[in-house]
Amino acid sequence: QVQLVESGGGLVQAGGSLRLSCAASGRTFSSFHMGWFRQAPGKGREFVAAISWSGGTTYYADSVKGRFTISRDNAKNTMYLQMNSLKPEDTAVYYCNADPRTLVDLIRDGGFGSWGQGTQVTVSS
Image (cartoon, rainbow, N blue to C red; front, side, top):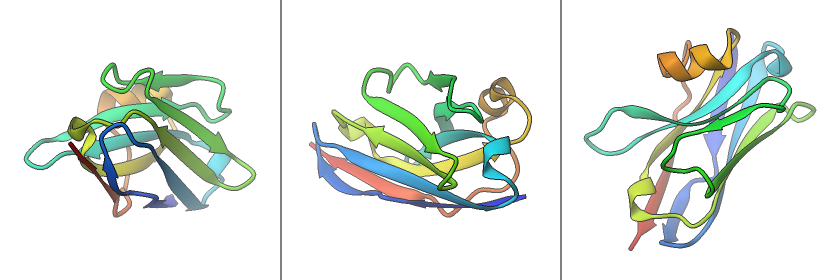
């Protein structure tokens, strides 16, 4: 089991940037594939981006491709999501997730195990 804490959310104008962090504790962080998901008001949780345990493979939802960058620092047990050119439709609570299986499993199943409290991102127009 790995415990996850998201941070870095806030209020930003359209076109602005934010960097989210996901701090992990518990089991070995570097053995988990990691992902970011988000949930907008009145909608289900959706996949945003995922990164392999080594950081060598990444996937993005089409809606964020070219604007968001996922990365990780295994020495710091932390994953990041750099969000640029933010749009009002990016407004959501953002969650990180850790999956010991495969990246495909993480994306297909919409996450694995427990979730953190999330961090709110609000983009004003």
